[in-house]
Length: 106
Image (cartoon, rainbow, N blue to C red; front, side, top):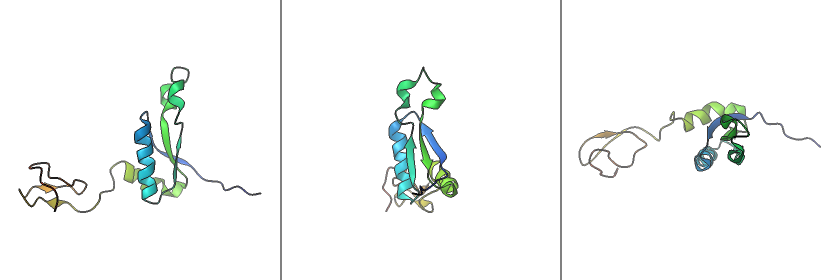
């Protein structure tokens, strides 16, 4: 019986399990297969070094690691900047509400 061998690569880590699972979900939504590792090691902190106890997101295909890091660390945006219809302020693509006047993107 043959088992598939994956080249795992860590792309994100945090002590916050919610943030780690959110990162994995974001990658999965982009078509990048990922897993969470060390999820429950925080209870061993003190017996193990703190840096070893962070929950981590690993991509299953090393070829996806660059795209995954770009997505998770702000390299990817959801489109071009937009101008607020109410006040004319230019807002970045990831925002749906104007930071200046509070108007929603049309």
